[in-house]
Length: 96
Image (cartoon, rainbow, N blue to C red; front, top):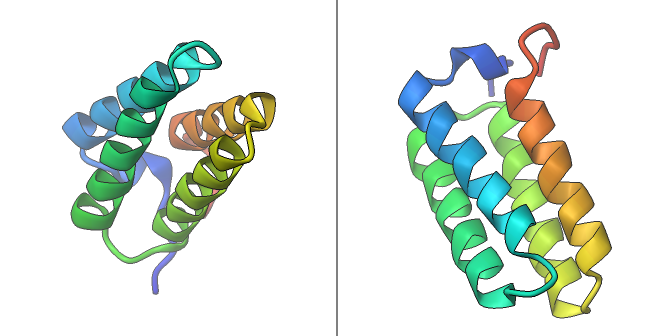
């Protein structure tokens, strides 16, 4: 596994992920189905488009954590995770 930085992600993949994470967070708490669909797409994009790295592991963990929070009805925690994942992608200066 390698350390990767958020700025190592191809721009189109970065844009897709940040848009999907924002869409999922914006959908909650009213539209659980949209949030879940966006989250599923985030998980697939991360799994298929990112190289093995700590960043990939952290994002996949975040997807699992959000899904768990949605399953228990804890929309506030799900939103917090989504925002944290979005922030993780937007960090230019922190190693992963």
